[in-house]
Each structure stands twice: as C-alpha cells, then as structure tokens.
Length: 148
Ligand code: MN
Image 1: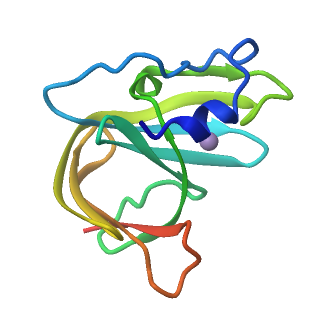
Image 2 (image 1 turned 135 degrees about the horizontal axis):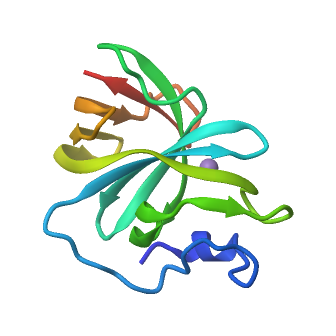
C-alpha cells in the first residue's frame, strides 16, 4: 500500500479524516472531487486506481470546456474511505479547513501509462473524457488535467 505519506502527515487523534485501515473493493472504480477551503482554496481531484485514491490538487478547479487544461499538483495517495469524507479539518492540522464533496461518480480508466492517464468520468458536474499527463518540461509533481 502506498498510504505511508498520507498517514505520516496526519494526527488521527485530532483530525476527523479516515485512518486508511480498511480496503473496500468496489465492482467499478470511482472518482471524487473535494472542494477544500485550506490556507488557499483549491479542489482535490481523486481517482480510484490500484486500491487507493490517486490524488492531485487543482488550484483553479477541473476544466469544464473541451481542450481546457488546468494545473494539477500530485499529492499523496489517499485511502479509498476518503471518497466519502467531508467535514472540518481542525486548525493546526495538515490541510486545516472545510472539505466538501464537489462531485463524484463512476470512473472508467481508458489508458494508463507512467506519465499519463486517459479516463472517462460519470459524475453530476464532470462527464466525459479527460486526461491527466506530465508535460516533460514541468516539475515532476506538476501535471495537467485536460477535458477532451
Ligand atoms: Mn486539499
């Protein structure tokens, strides 16, 4: 499991976030987008891949129009239970601030490579094909999220 970084950053005695101990296998994978009022307001874009939620912070929110690209900063993998998390991360804790679910739904991964993922989303707000990719000239953690 790749949740070491997730656990290291959090004090589970103080944050209501899930501890990441149980793994629920779903028939079909899901995505979730959290809206997060942390020190700077952003969206957290999460895809269920290989038993965890692969996660990116998207400062300006997911693209809504064809061809539109948004910076997506890779962050630590989150446990699957995080998909249903919403609430208030207390002051002084990692990511302190309010978290709400902005969109969620079924995910279909169409193609996955080391530096790119092509997928379809079946959410309320986000529908259709998207891709996440690492432009070679960018810093390693910086990806682009594009609506196709
Ligand atoms: Mn966040």
